[in-house]
Image (tube, rainbow, N blue to C red; front, side, top):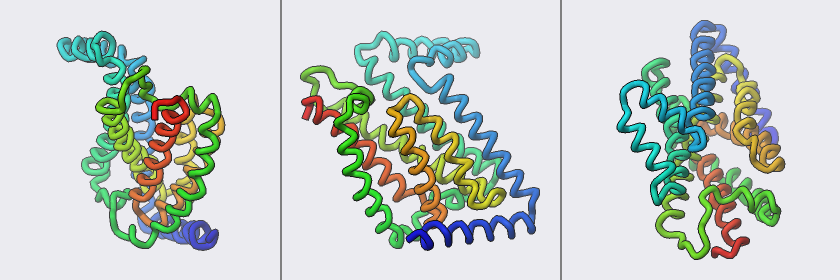
Length: 271
């Protein structure tokens, strides 16, 4: 298994990188730089404009450029509306969908002028790789089930906290759907855009470059989850290089994340 999913993948990607650098080093380095600067822009946007607690920066920006009505509507939705709690979660998810999907897709199409399928948005080969993802799900499920008994876990999840007596429908179910979509964006950005965008320049080492920012977005979560993100980034990045597709990784990530939410609800007596 190590040879099939690690060693052979590393050898193949490093050989492709060496050939690409020999053929057109300038283009490989240009693509890498565009990807890295996009990464910095996305992280900056999410840090200062992508959370409801810091939405005032976005509100002030909208007001400064003449969209004062939009700024007022956003302020009302996030802080004064009867559905403010839900709106804040929507703002968080939509910000990530925009940052992880829309921005890199714009860059791929209009700056790099490449195909989306070159960055993991491909369904080809999915029938050959599902078994390893199923194995990973079987390994991870009992791990996060045990972790769900921890106080730190139950304090963190779910992101949308139910009030006493509040039903799952409609707000919590709507939240889970948005939550799943943003995980598709996350997988596309980190495993698709970053890894496939840098592999021609760095070869297999593109995975380790990707793991660094991927780890940082887990700061603020329980330490065990932040540590686990290093291994998850390495494994999912390698598998995406092998399959050249993000979609089974999306399915695995959604399964883990949504299961953690429902486990937390179960522990807290909401199910």
